[in-house]
Length: 494
Image 1 (cartoon, rainbow, N blue to C red):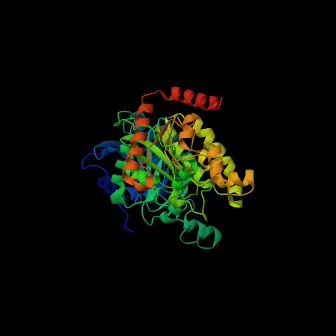
Image 2 (cartoon, one colour):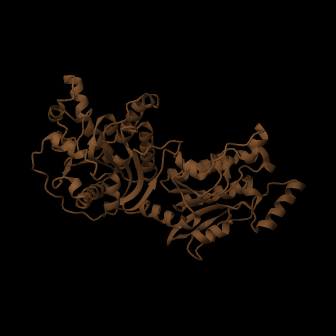
């Protein structure tokens, strides 16, 4: 693999001529003779004075702070001087309210400085946490290799984390493992591609694509919260469609789901991946996007990713909670899209904490300090659906529905058969119009007569309703919205 230097990467990612260095001479670490000779040799061979370069530049005309490692300087290792330079840059980015892009490539802690260097990761993590607490973006690009304390601190704290194809990324360097255990580390584990497959990275992209993804992420995050184009909503559906008709319509294999909605009704979509904690579930789609110009974090139950053999499990809800944290940390509105036949009913789901994840989603959503919109796009069966319902505005497609169980399950409980499913759907008031009358839903979006028969028009109509809701909520103080949201669910049914 050809490794780019720090300056080559900066030239590739930043607009030409826009980089301004923030670096001052490294602090004196009082090296002994042998270490001083190593530092001098590293400066001569690498052409830089430390393993970290910092500064600011433009990405597609947008100002960004950058911290980039140079592997040619003592394998990109982090000692006291490198850490001090890095922390100063993070603090300056925070003070100047700049997005921060980090591009580590490192063997980890600088062994020549021992435990004191090791402890530098604490202050780096603290500085980045303060940056994020200021509601400022932190984006990470992991290069080959990124290991040790660097990966275990500032390399793993990004709002969005991308890695270089084929990059070695891991906590314990394979050479160290070999020396400690007299055996090679298992192949294929510490690779960018494997970590992506396990939900630890959002994407694996070559350096040539980095500026585009940074620009797209920042277009979403920095977009105005209000002022999105609004449209006059269509009249509410007046057809008295039986509940069972809607249930069957929601189950059509060709019904548009969240992916179609984003493809046809959103721009600047940035798909994210996994919980960031070693899990991913194809039953949930997590993304940053602009819907009708309005920026948001999207949590969508993906009908394409849910099958009879692999229904939506607790990992999907943990991934959803990652999205809730992103919305909070970036002060972005949150859009949840409900479309599920029900969460997994299995030993794995029970042992994986499904009930607890439903509870935590409910608790976090109803108290989220940012505007929220919930969209009942299709099936809404059970606790897996309820977990994404609480919001400031709840919209429903005409054939969207919400029930404690699939109607067949309710029939089995009450009648000890599934033959009464249609009757139970009607009795339980699962239809969108029933939910509207009960105050659970705020707006019903018409289908003519079925979203599957008019996918483009349907998705465009739904996106317009979502954008209008996001735009309207963006004009309110988030604290006022939170108070109203809590009051809404406190008085529901009374």
